[in-house]
Length: 213
Image (cartoon, one colour):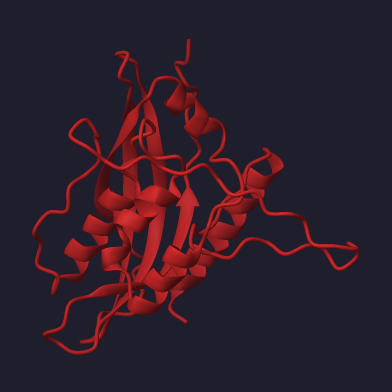
């Protein structure tokens, strides 16, 4: 395993632990919901999350743009922009944006994302954005990988993408949007085939104090 993936896993564990202690959960959105503990007499009931509204002309979400899908970096950045470009006036949960970005996933990972149904609320930060009917602008950039990370091959590539987002409310409010690092493994079936994302490990950044009223 390349050091890049090892670092990602270690960071993900640390980030998840910190968020868990704070009462939050971190992880991939297309992962299955946790099962009940072995000592429970019956599995916990699943409560479906609210449905998102269809997008219309007033929706502030990133549009799919033309990119060279034979460029792994371009695919990674396009995925991040779509995955973290929310509009809380339309999206009921962050997973709605993940589905818009599923075009850049491998067929297996896209199927998993589409079959996943959130069973809990989107969290306090989302609720703060929603109180302003805010949308987020995800500013994605490539981050440096470890020096000893495995180099790309013809059919496999690793990318680290940083997202530093801004939230903008329809009432004029402005605040912090999504902030994270995404560690991605991309694959393709041949040298002329498009790159698709096979694995994602996301580490949320610690958000600065909010300017909520």
